[in-house]
Amino acid sequence: MSGEFEEGFYYVCANCGRTLTTKDFEMLRRIQCVYCGYRIVYKVRKPGVKKVKAI
Ligand SMILES: [Zn+2]
Image (cartoon, rainbow, N blue to C red):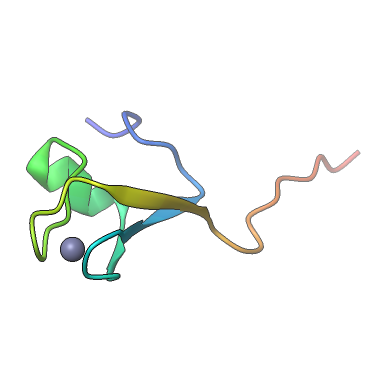
C-alpha cells in the first residue's frame, strides 16, 4: 500500500498553503489537496531527515 510516495518529504498545497502528508495522498489514491481539492502541491524535504551511514 505505502511506498508509492516518497518518504522524507511533505507537501504544501499551492492554493491554500496547508501542509499535506503522504498519508493524505494514500487516502485519496492521488496527489491532491485534501482540504481544497487543488491538484498542484509543492514537494518539500523534511528537515533533519538526512540519512547518514554509521560506519
Ligand atoms: Zn489546498
